[in-house]
Image (cartoon, rainbow, N blue to C red; front, side):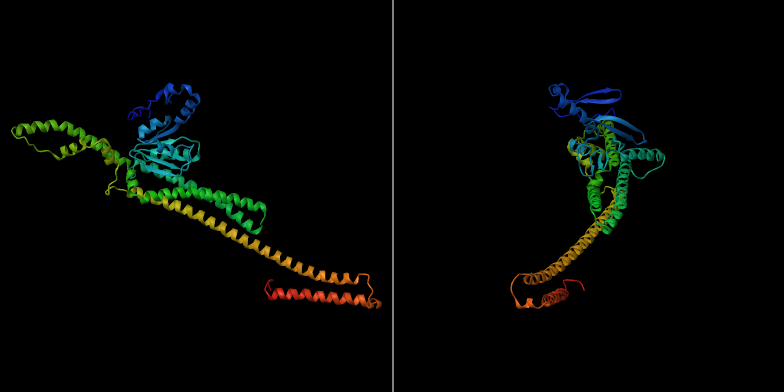
Amino acid sequence: MEGFRGPHPPAGVPEPAVSLCNGRLNLDGYGNRGSSFPGLKKRGHALGNRSWIKIDQDGNSKILELDKVTIMRHCSLPSRDLRLLDPLFIYPSTILGREKAIVVSLEQIRCIITADEVILMNSVDVCVVRYMSEFCKRLQTNREQADDLPFEFRALELTLELTCTSLDAQVKELELEVYPALDELATSINTLNLERVRRLKGHLLALTQRVQKVHDEIEHLMDDDGDMAEMHLTKKKQRLEAYALGDIYFQNDIPAETRVVSKSAPGSPVRSISGAQKLQRAFSNTSPSKHGSLMSSSSNGENIDELEMLLEAYFVAIDNTQSKLFTLKEYIDDTEDLINIKLGNVQNQLIQFELLLTAATFVATIFAVVTGIFGMNFVASIFDLPSAFNWVLIITGLACVFLYFSFLFYFRYKKVFPS
């Protein structure tokens, strides 16, 4: 990793000054130009160098301090791809196939996979530590055993496995909290239970978005054969090495053939050209950009069955996790509907009670009006009888009771009250 080399930066871009001290790579990207802006230089330095873990094909891991330019040159990646791995930015889950690398950003696992090594962003997260230990263990265990999957697919498989396992474990933990909380809320509706369910629902929505991003990314890869073919880094590397060996063979073989042809047919201006020479001439006349696009383009004959089967297995797993989340959301919605029904029932009972109270108040008001009239000081012959006022109260009370029960009968007849 310390010997990363690549093409020189374009004209006008200053060459970063690299110094090696105590096995750590230090970078000052702008030399003395940032002397008038010490704060800017300090921030640029802090953001340029990051701790990475390099894992080779033998399962050996090494912690390195690398800057963005070094990684871009080594892996032939643009700067926008490295921004996907920056923990300071929040990007959705992404799996990108490039010319010489696969850029993976799934949850807390952010790495660059090449044909012979994995450059993993160092972190204290459990998933990152588990990825490093598990991948090194698998590589060292299967070192002498033949594996059908190439190195980059094995690295990608472990990334998908840990991501799906982590998300599924979080969903199971959420299930253990949600179901009892909802059952308790359905039994007893109070502020404490409502606040607890609200917090769990927010956690559920956030987790659903994360699972949905991983689900969509895997589905997008499965639907695009070109992207899957672009991830066959080992085949592209072998093809590139074969082309390089062919070029060396052509360069060493052409002078001998030229001499043979010149001796066999000295007077003939036309000589036969072998198929290998035609291939060499075709590649020599091809521009570097076209040559690179030819190496990176996916053909219909590209074997994508291995990657497609791998993605399909974890697509089923993440789809199952997503189904659990949808089931949880439906259970929450059903509980909310049940609570709304209960609250509506309570509200109806309050309205019924208020209606009964209003009818009783109306009847009592009539009785109070009658007694109030006879309590006034005015001259009337009815007051000459000692028991007349008592009969007035009895008749008025019976009339009020009859009126009140008439109201009740009318309400039941109109089905305002349940029978």
